[in-house]
Amino acid sequence: MKTRFLWPLVALLFVVVCFGNVFARDELMIFCGAAYKKPMDEIIQRYMKKNNIDVRVIYGGVGTLLSQITMSKRGDILMVPSSYIMEKAQSKGLVVPDSRKDFAYVVPVINVRKGNLKGIRSLADLAKPSVRVAIANPEIVFVGMLAAEIVEKSLTREDIKLFKKNIVTTPEDFNKLASALLLDKVDAIIGFHYLSSWYPDAIETIKLRPEEIQRIGAGQIGILSHSKMIEQAKDFQRFLLSAEGQGVFAKYHYFGTPEEAARWVGDRKVVGGERPASTDWFGKE
Image 1: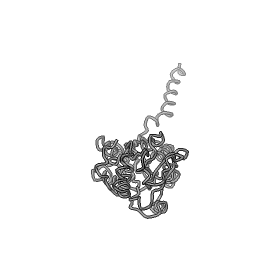
Image 2: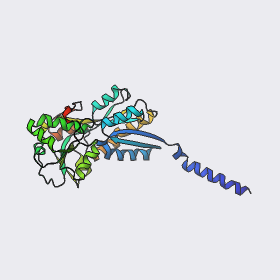
Image 3: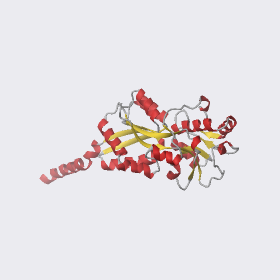
Image 4: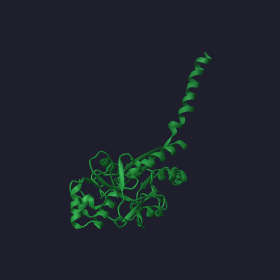
């Protein structure tokens, strides 16, 4: 009789011991620019293995992310590819003052499919007939803003018109921009230098001339002011900025310092900063 009542208690104790922590696990929510997806997926997996916490990440274009945060008042961390975007978030009261930290640097380039069948060697080649081009939406995606600025500052007025005629899509985030190239919907994109390391068998990088690059991106991580997990968010931020976290970014060929990026470019460039594209780029689908 005693044994019959003992087994249910033992089973209940087993469930509590084995699954109690699972039921009690908290969830850290990160809003992250899509340009960091590959390294962030790995960093998050490493962090979750070291800590009894779940991490949920939402990737997207920075404009879309800011809108989601503003409307939902949810999340704990924001990660973006430029300081001006973080400044914009902070001006809206979305980011804890003094929580912003730099973590990686990115350089705009031309990305083409492996083999480069169209023989693209320069920015001017993207204005040639029959070349299918994509840039990210310059209104809501940082790399799209960079692309618009590069074209406007580097090409002649006539070539700008021809370049725009060659644009077949303006994706809403970096991953969709990369997918357009991977799926052979376009011949070239203005993307970031590391994309060929994400897909070494499918994508090649064509460097822009130093004078064509107007600025580089500086990744920033900040803690959202409405977070209910401030200390856990700070802990994740420390992990991302640690040697292990930065090593993951280096593995995917992100630059660790502005100087490293400048050496690759061949010249020092403005880091971050806002340069809105002209309005006639907007709405190009």
